[in-house]
Image (cartoon, rainbow, N blue to C red; front, side):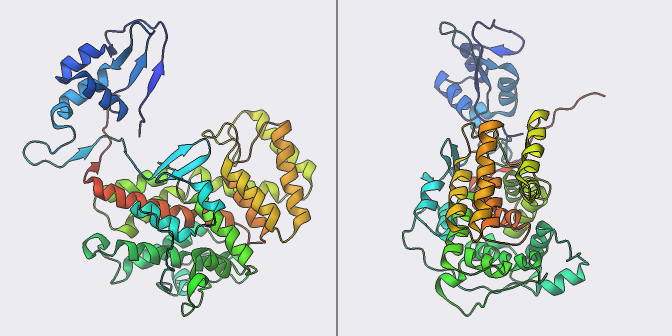
Length: 432
């Protein structure tokens, strides 16, 4: 479990000698200065609770004892004596993405601003990976699909009539691993090249969602923007090609590129910390993603909005709201005032819709639901509506989300490698 720094207030709470320590007691046990103790709290290593203003904070005895036993107070995360591996508590420090009320910010750049200014997904991916912003990001070189996906799907006996896009993406990434060039990207110094190949190749799988039920790889002899990831998605899905469609999908990719430490991201980082190559790290993330809430939310919202009658949609949503359980695609817990990414995508959907009347009907339904049922759309719903507005194939939203999120997973793999530590959660044995 990844635990962020916590300072839970507990006014008037009595000092519990068994569970908590004063700052003086904690610092004494760890043989550190108070400033170092506060640093441990900020890193999430020690949980603290607030009393009243006069008594200050108390510190978890369990956390202090664990740090004391493992020598963190002296080594501060350094190598253990005897050259043992450098392990990390299940706490991840990252400079890639932070979540704000206005949505995620990538390396200090608000994702919404990047989308509004129509920066390319490729530029944003490079920003996530390197931390450096390039105003003029050159077009990525044309990269052909690693294998003929149709043959791979046939050999794996995948039911192409009911395609599971995450399974297809996993097959594609596996094909990259199997190639002679799919070895140790870190040792070979070609991580960025491997990352670009991954993102440029995945859109070919979109064809299995279209009527053709086969992969569609763009002509790699083309140049410039025609090779952008968004344009490849349009081509792969067999959608109506236009600058407006490509721009709208590019905005969606930018907004969805990363969202801090999701379970999929943690899986990728765990694999990276153990020395796995880039493609195996992405396969780890895809495995977790296959059953993730956000992936299922796209499909469930799509099924809900596919209902022709607005009254039926309203009744189904109202029933879910009354149940008190989480509603897929609505009321994101990190955005209590509404998910700004969803608001932006819904606005794009209205302005770029191929069937404006149908899109306005759906957006109006969502606005009324927010007013009457207090359910605000999250980014999954915004993406589903955008895909519907652009007349992309059924289940395209989940596919686009996955392609976009791969950029963030890659960034976290790179960052974890630089940390030079193995992520190893600790177990607490319970006698049965």
